[in-house]
Length: 310
Image 1: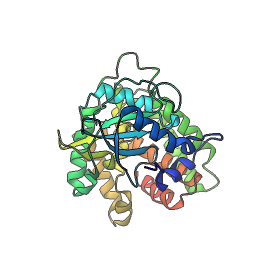
Image 2: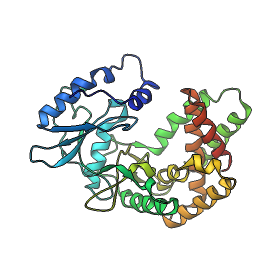
Image 3: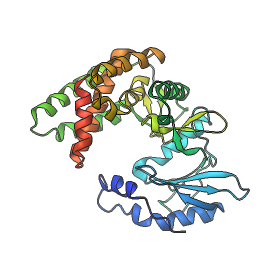
Image 4: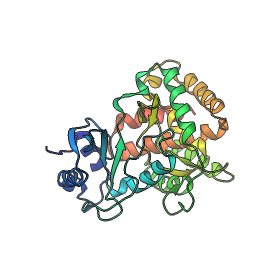
């Protein structure tokens, strides 16, 4: 079959693509090579799929359903592989091919190819009522916060390093809009304060939200699609605070709901409320400014209005 990347993936990877990055052009051939190497039967490409990888529903030689995931090097697939192996299926999708091996795609180190347990790709906790969805998502996230694997300093970014890169990009693209500049200043100040004396570091999912928690067979819900890093738990939880941001913005009591959500999530996961608020502010402003930079003004408007409530 033809492994054409879904339009959503093409758009997302096209936004920040560095010059000379031909990953999308190589993808159809690379996907076929990965399938042939593992003797897989292809069912279909998952559409709309993710924004950083091609997801293909397959069956292994013994008929077991699985997922083949191909991601470019800039999406850090080898960090994901190490994190999934460390979690061992506890709270996250099971890695079916722990050893990296070698493929023609992307050089050595597994070539950005992951073979994963099949979940129910069309059923996430977003399908639940909001209060139940937050409860289930938070419970799943708690299981992922474990000690990082020994010797993984060179594998995972830290919260400080990742947000440092983001802070530089935010400062460079805040523009002349006074309101945006004020939010960027507040977000950068919050980050500086939060990094002074952070709590104990844990292995974090990195991009956790309701849509990253899928229905499973062996347990009700499992997390997928981590961009793992090491740092404090409040950073990981911050993205969950703004889930369903469109509904929050549309509500006349969105600001009050957001503040209650910060309090409820902090209490339920034993996270300091003010640290959660600070990281929520930073991550919302960073996402909003990035959306402006890549030409998504509607997304930017929602995110920056949300940030203003914090």
